[in-house]
Image (tube, rainbow, N blue to C red; front, side, top):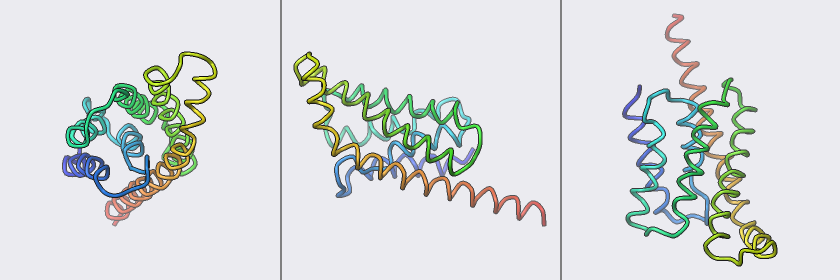
Length: 164
């Protein structure tokens, strides 16, 4: 297991939340997915969660935090158990699924805490969140593509060196 990569991913995810960025445009969902796909360690699921805890300590905790953390755990498990092949198409499908999972779970928490508990309150909550969904989709697709390419490049490089 590459511990340096794990440490770098943790701090990259945490510090990306401090850098100026559009709302919900961070690599955290992609990192949760990538950790599930790429690492087999027992406690690897802690990377995205620890990244959030570090950054939330400085940014501030909020009332929907548990819904965010649960969605990251589910995204990690999605990568761990559903990524059967290392294809770009699989990465895209899992990335899109991750963004929608995060959107559904985190906004369910927003609805429970800040909107009327009615159908119209539920719809209003999710409609208000649609602009954030676009940023989440774009960032997750971009970062997951970069992680997929880096992983594929690393595998091909190892095969090249091994076959020499």
